[in-house]
Image (cartoon, rainbow, N blue to C red; front, top):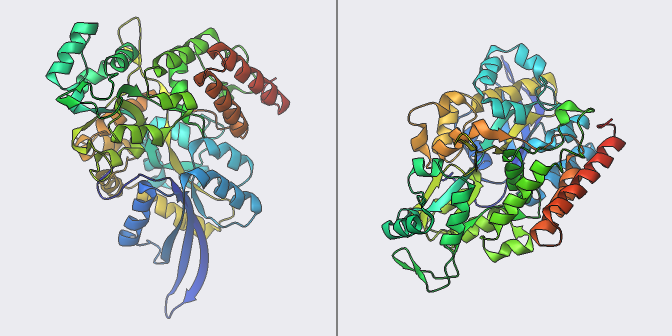
Length: 476
């Protein structure tokens, strides 16, 4: 998402609002301050800057949007501390999608149905939002008709690749001779790339320092592929779940609580097979994966340093790859759809875990503040603003923008992002999500670092979830 902003660091911002009445004769206008908490990165920085430049409240009030930009690593902790302290600091928050259940159950995020039902503009926006975003950014309980948010920044994982290597005639001929497969270069070739080809790319491009690579030689030990294998946060889960879903496995289904089970589902044969497939390909990645530290920013850095040929990473952190100040291959980087599992009919299943964040409003806002906050949402979700955001490194929440013929030209990963939305699902939104995720990440890491088999890890995850969710009444 490069253009006028860069997303290299971390993520921030929540919108909070307080109001002071300032009388002026003969009319009465008010100063309304909307304090918003959000991650400190490009999409929220752009929101603040563009608001300051262009926003005028229809009410005639003087509405200010004041961001609390928080680094991603501490974003959840800071927001949670504020909400649970009772300080009522924020009027709006940009929440990661998986957090909404926790903060709704805590009484902090406002249900928006009555406002949507009463406002044709909000209704039109909801109809224009991609269903994957509505379901995963807005609803609680998950997949219900209770709405709490609007997309501030949608995100998907895409393939980043070195086109000087993947489009190199010699490398393509050698790959064809070795595997009888096409080394993907064009968008359509990447669209036809499954995990078998991805694994072969990993084998093929493993080169020692000094070995021939494209038109030159490898400056470092070189690896063909990498994807997330990090213990921190949700890094490993975001990639492993794609393999599990594609193989026909599943996670505990909160939408069917209390009848849905964890044991027998989370550790099904299909889920174990999917996790093992992930581990089998991971061995072709750079050796840092053996430490459990190969997260989003680690693989981004490996790619920009020229130590790996292709990675799967979020579009949201892609802009630095196009910046010659930080990437050695800024002019040689291409983007495409992610690989997936080839099915018996020849199609490729790319089911994956959605990223991105919604706007939410807090429950302690007055009606006046709520109205102004929703006007800000409507401004942000207007087609003109969404187009401007898309031209400056962001991803729109509106299908009408993604369907524009020129949309794919705004950013080099846009076509892949839009085509991948149909495959997106999400992990749980339930308040137990953090306990489940933390334990799951621990178990995934044990398998990644060789301490457990895939089955042992999945059995431990299923047992933990079954016990936890039964204890809190989410499983009968």
